[in-house]
Image 1 (spheres, rainbow, N blue to C red):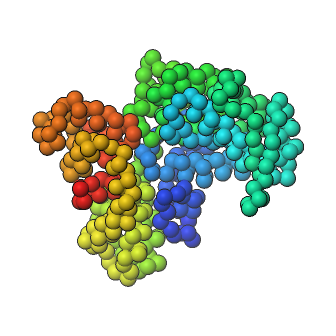
Image 2 (cartoon, rainbow, N blue to C red):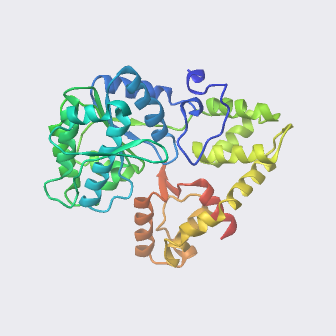
Image 3 (cartoon, rainbow, N blue to C red):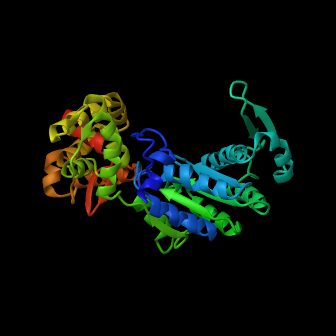
Length: 383
């Protein structure tokens, strides 16, 4: 199983971008589950914290396999991260539809496919002068009331009547605070037929409110798949395969220590492992080597973290820093924590709600912690 996902011919630590098929570690079980659900035209909700590889899995493996199984197909993919209102949702859907149409059909047949699938519209095609790649414009605007969430899904439904179709929406939980959005998506999902829909999210508590609360419009919608941490042994082998070319050895005990130090978040582990490669060669690694690589990786991202802190008030920054220094905390409104930050129970509570909604902190096994372990260490060591 491992060899099918981690190809030994491509030994790279990839981060800050989607991970290609050859370098995705594990996730074979989830790939098989998603493929089966797609074949059964089922609806699925995929949860994983940020930087766990869910988007890479969907875009670089699951969608790629779907296209290979179906010589002619349509895949609608969009990301709703940061949408602010209904207009921004509709604009995101329209833009994604235009891009997905261009991605799904060969350039040489684009005009023919436009006539076949979008006969009720008057789309225009433009060619990028540098890349030579086409792009289409449907000539519709989210500011016009006639165009809506339902309208975009009706376009997808029309295409699905002629060729296999798949819908994938990333960071779906960001619609939660927008009035009517959940009800409108529910209506749209009910009206499309015979199309598998995959919704992904990275904020567990918001996804729970959308899909598990009895009075929510999308309550009990879909089948749940949660992407767990990669097993220690499999990630250790993944690391070994990439270290061996540099003469580096990391024993199993230290590999587990490294994984736990970084909350078993694949992207953070890959960042630190790549830093180890840049610092050392031909040696058996020690705990001090791991710490040194971690500090260098954080120092290389110092400006990024400083910029992130500009988003928060002084009070919020105080709470974040103290949480980082505590590592994790079960009761943020406890007397002990309130004394450390010199803030009221109500103020700390509001900060934690905001940080959870932004995905800055997460709750794991009844305790809160900074979601990004590198950011957490930066706050702990340098603030």
